[in-house]
Length: 65
Image (cartoon, rainbow, N blue to C red; front, side, top):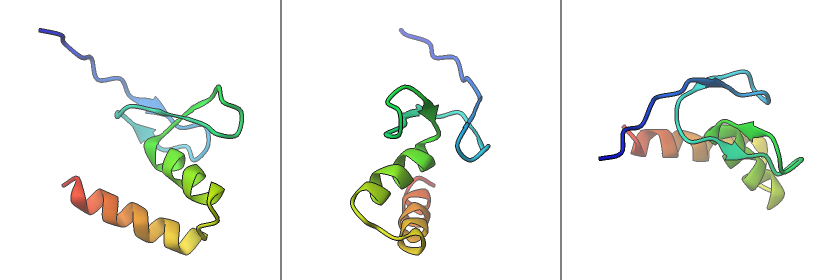
């Protein structure tokens, strides 16, 4: 059985601490960022505004509880 070690990281984009799988930033294709910033970058890339991004993230967080 594979054991996973929880690793706490700090997102260089927003400064948040996170333990989930990181996302790869679309900005440079190298930097690992938190899942929320990864979602924000993806939504920005298709023209979704900031307010709607936050609503989408809230819905994602609610569904994960």
